[in-house]
Image (tube, rainbow, N blue to C red; front, side, top):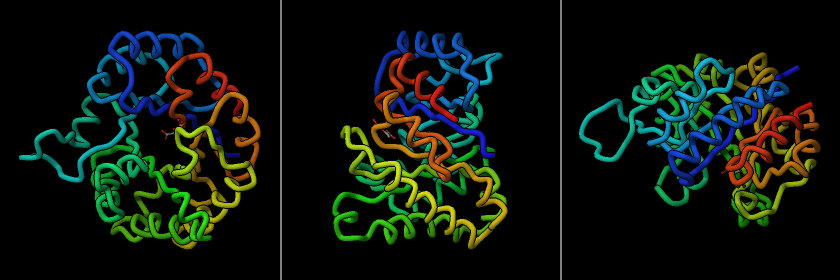
Length: 249
Ligand code: PEP
């Protein structure tokens, strides 16, 4: 059985004090039903890393540059995230895709760079509401996935890759995909990965993200191809986030 992973994406929220206190509360609770990953804003990575010392809870970032280093003002290199204690990095989040021009090619380049530096990429894929209405969910997800699955060295990348299915229409909207809707896309993703590496597809963790709350987490995580969640809003306070971690089967 695949052990669940629950990741908190704090997005651009909080303060140093909040990062400190939220980390302390999560560490003190010692969630053990799922692996847990915290992805705070970049300036607070050090604060959260210090709070996680000695804990099994892992640290991740929300994005990184596709470039190794150099004249890219404002960007953060994957190697710097490793230096800061990160094991994971979220890449291709729909907010990056929609607001910051991260197209499939750039996301794939980021995945390659992050993995080359030793990070485990959490690749986000998902359709917009228009794509779902046009019955183009699978086409959209396939396009996003195939950009990564076509990378040189994909066999090694797959060994460390986590994929998060996040329907864009469900992120931060209070709308959640039904467990059946989410399961259908997760099964599609697993089958797509299996075309490249069937064994790895079988044990790869596929997270669901999109308005996951304590009230809906258990039924989503109970689906056969849903192995945890990528949690936005509900990861900003310890109580709901821990309840979601504890909803893992
Ligand atoms: C996210 O930010 O990846 C996300 C799923 O947000 P929310 O849980 O708030 O919908």
